[in-house]
Length: 104
Image (tube, rainbow, N blue to C red; front, side, top):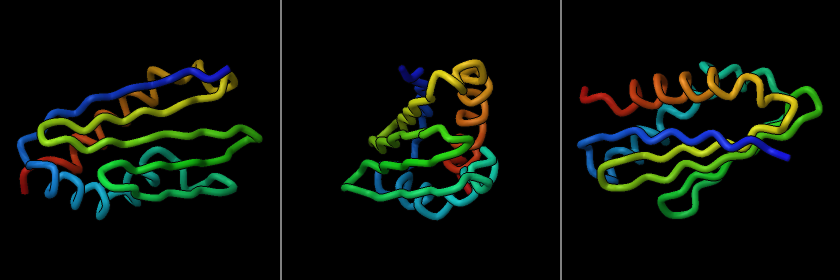
């Protein structure tokens, strides 16, 4: 059974600019979350939704990022093995996502 982690990040960029920043900065998110050390990682955009899957320590992590006009919603499904760190993951997602969407 998985533990869902959801983060909503408000922004004033509009959908297009928010998506552009996320596309450009997703590598940074992977590095910050330590995902760069996983055995495999896949991502794909379908319209305004990014799907991603990662595998680490024999566990699969999957998630979605939805880009809306005024908010970005990040949902990550953690396997039960990693459920204990759900609060930490949620905090890091919020911090890193907010940095990507800051006005520059």
